Image (cartoon, rainbow, N blue to C red; front, side, top):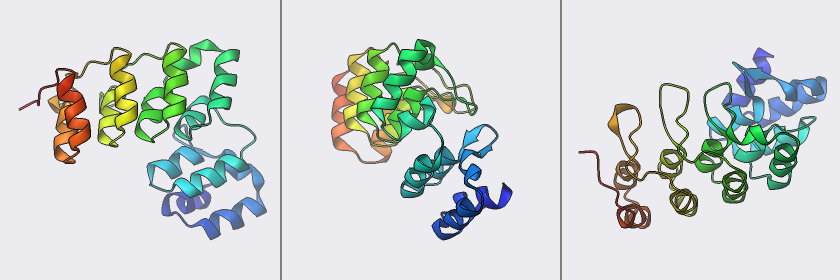
Length: 187
């Protein structure tokens, strides 16, 4: 599976397709518990993530949330409501992933089904979903999270707050939203 995962990380669609044709089970590969579709997303390869999602036997809540597959998210939450607050192998909730990868419909479903908008990632980043939305410039999702009770001044590792990301990205719309909800820069 090393060659397959290397091809996913590199975004080598041709090689990924060749390896999938030789072994369709490769689509189920993981690296440290992170699925191939999520690995592709982490490396900025959304189109490849979509291809890998179609090749898998089924998507888990983390992949479904990141890819905005709301029907699948709802199906998984119907079967196990605890999935709304579960953490992935790399320490994120499905809501963190939906927020970061720009999946507003999945984020809304997750919030509506009890996802914790103040959940702190279980990794060195120590981010909340609002940090994820701010880093990815997801204003609509940031608004949803704030409306659901996210703390506009929550600090992640290093003391950074969501407003810091808006300022760094020169995202005036996100900055206005956060300031309107009482956000202050960390410094």
